[in-house]
Length: 229
Figure: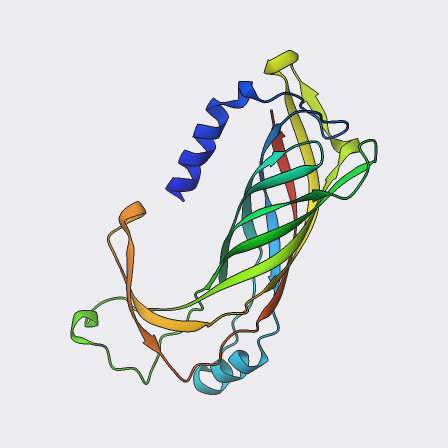
C-alpha cells in the first residue's frame, strides 16, 4: 500500500505536464486518480463445499476498496489498478482503447488487464502440522494466481465538472466499470505467516495440497470517483 501512495504522489508532482482536464474531446494527456467501491463475484462451489464440510463455514464476499491511477489520451488509456478487500485482493496493469465518440455522454474504454489475484479466507487448517519455524506463529491460508482479463471503464460525462483554469484546473469524474478475469496458469494455496511489517513484510509459507482451487473465472463490478489534471 505504501508503494501505491508513493506512486500517486510522484505522478501528482508532474500534473502540470498534462493538458486538458475533461474526457470530452481530450486532445492531450489526462491523469486521473480514482477511488471507489467494488464487489467480486466468483462461483467457488468446490471450495465452499470443502469449508462447509470441514469447518462448518462459508466464505462470504464483501465489498472492497478500489484504487486506480489512469493516464488517458484522446483514443487510448493505460494505468494501474488495485482492489483491496476480503477475501480477495487484486492488482493489475492495463491498457486499452476508447469505444465511444469524443462527444458522447459516456466515455467508455475497453482495456486488457494482466495482474495477480490473492485470496485469504479466514480458515485455520486443523489437519496441518506446523513446521519448526511456524510453531507459535499466527498462520494464514492464502491463494495466489496470475490472471488476464478485460475491463470496460465508463466515465459519466454529464456528472463531471472542473474547478480552476488553465494548467491549474482540476476535473472531477465519476463512473462505473465491469471486469472479467481468467486464470489460465497454475494456482496454488500457501500456508504461512508474515515476517516484518509494512513494505518489509514477507509471507513465509509452504504449499498445501488437497484444497480445491478457486474458480478460474471471476467478475468484478464497481463505481468510482476520480480527480484529473
